[in-house]
View 1 (cartoon, rainbow, N blue to C red):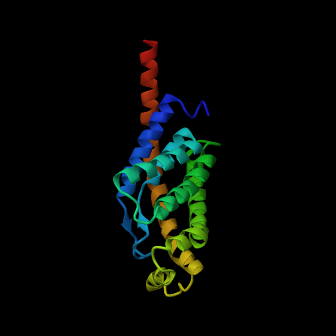
View 2: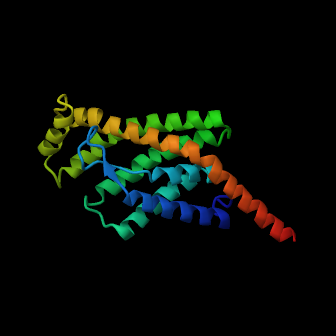
View 3: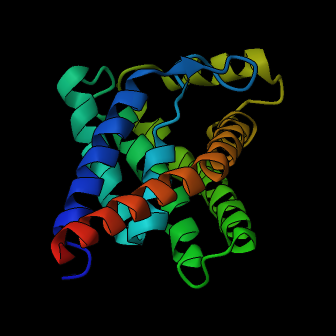
Length: 207
């Protein structure tokens, strides 16, 4: 815990959390996969980079800061259901990916850890939506309307579980793959910037 809450890590978690919150504001639907009340965003990228750089708990804290920042700029329209789902599924991607990566920090491990996080997020998205999110969201939109919206995209959708399997599963798989690819492209550059900052700070202390 002492290693996690250093001044540098606190600054990084705040910066990554703020950036993630701003990215969460820029969302858009993927109407070929799920109804338009499911929104795609890239807010998991800073959380993944932070999780890789700081550790799994750091990634979770960034996810929490992200939600708070988003709510400051844009109040909830779903009774916090959407924000809670985003946090839970973001952690479902960030936690396993950053845990595996911290065993051995190589490119191969990074790819495998992101693949594991992608599968975990996809599976968790199906189960959590079917058991928790969709029943709760039905207080704002009738379940029949939710299922009907899914059936317009995939005719096989006729229940909560088929909606979760055919709409939510592919949606989260697409999102996790896109976020993972961008994280792989960006992480090394951001990591080098952090190392450069550390070495510069160390040089100033020695001087």
